[in-house]
Length: 406
Image (cartoon, rainbow, N blue to C red):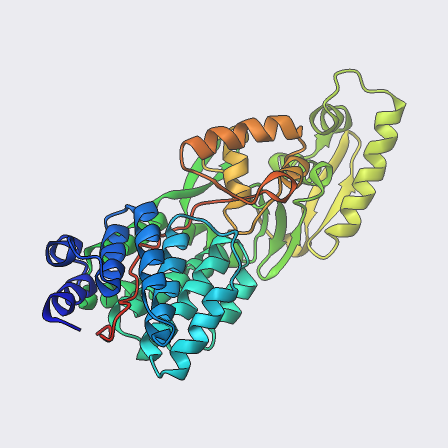
């Protein structure tokens, strides 16, 4: 590798894309094309970067399998930055195997991190955790360690393990500082900012208190019975009963929680839950059926007591009750709250959870997507909706030439 390519590679390792381009911008040999592609990706020109990396991969000879594998993995990271998640994962897996055979362990671990980040962006949280488990983060170079810790932090925060998430973000910040890559440092700061934004509201009698994520997690871990309108369920401590796909039952639980410790009139419940102003005997019969179903589902957490006027929710062991709502009112707020768990939702599942028409949900999702507050993967019936990552996953990229990342 000549001196200009070596200097450009070292500049890219430090996040100096412009310095790298000054050295190789006019060259068309495969190593220079690859470095130009990486530089363009770091500058946000991902489409151009993908084209350059493909040209570089084709330019390397059949005997240069290591260089070609590095180009494949770099292109996979560009696809990650473009949120182009529909392609096959086989080329990335094959490239990872080549890197392992050639003992290029730093780049092989980078490739494994790309695979884990892809799963995270697809909302496959359990698979992400499994993919990340074999990675020894302590042995990674600082730039890769920062990326890995960001994945760990997002997994923890999505499941409301705030202490673990904060610890991972602190480690990510330290690694990003040691790496000296400004994009990584900004990414960690963005993720840390999510901890200070309102995550929910605690509703009381005529009042609402904004809560940060740590405060929500503390309430969920307490002895109180928490009725959570963000994630559409209720529970005490680690015991949780999801009602996301049972909108009528959740609406009943929420109405009863709003009236706690009092009761709710039968007519008011019918009007609120069944959306009718003229209830008849069929509505009253249905109310009894739905109350019975709700009783059965939440018997480990609370009783539903029939009163002279209607029904009242009674937490077991005289526990206090806490009602959480999305940070703001409206259909969009409810959608964002449901998507905050990081999982992939179909439009039909969201409409079922919100008890709204699919057309209404589609309009709200389109508005949120235009604002960058949700994202879609897949097409037509396979389309799924997710919330944006807590961190942006800046493209760090590999060096597709014989230079280790240090």
